[in-house]
Length: 80
Image (cartoon, rainbow, N blue to C red; front, side):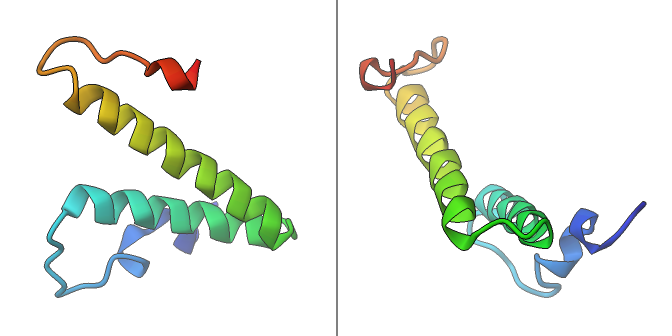
């Protein structure tokens, strides 16, 4: 079944030039996921914890990759 959650144009607004398209797409994906969770009647606190976890993971991976200077990504010591 195809519905609005699978259609990013409903979250990413037409005519808006994003300064960082990858981040805009990522946030749109997370917003769609949050909408799916709300549709399943999950509590706002549960959804927030899950979204925060994904944001922390993305930040951790970004830091690891940026600090690597082109080699293979490593998991930061604090994440293990």
